[in-house]
Length: 192
Image (cartoon, rainbow, N blue to C red; front, side):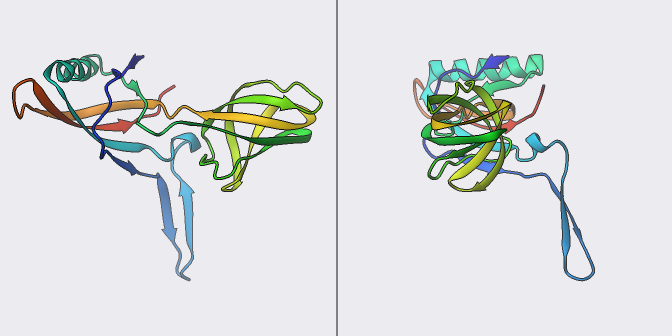
């Protein structure tokens, strides 16, 4: 899997969410909403990016994008400011459900987090990657542990922000010597 070059887009990118939901309106004013497809792929993002870079960097970007057209492969891209690391507390009470409390956590159901248990009361929970199972409010969410336990302590979570993307088209302009502007849209895709 190719990774987009470490070249940062110009400030002012546009992010668009496109949730996949089917709505059936009923005669009495109620409506039924259902997810369309697999739960983890319900909210693909589209980023409209501008790279105002040197001619050399623009050649690197353009060569990378042309190569992805040739091999028809997606690539890994981490949008600026999309990932984060936060700390908080956790509790697990005689079950596999781990409740994590972090003020304004910013995670959603289905997000994959890297969790490191930094202190524990009695056990030794396993660090690793976990999927957010539920999000009760903006300060509390749950993940499912591999085994049942009773424990509590502090925790650190990391959301990488990286995803798989394709770029269907882009434009390159050269406003003056040794400078170039590349405008492109990266569309998130979901692949195994």
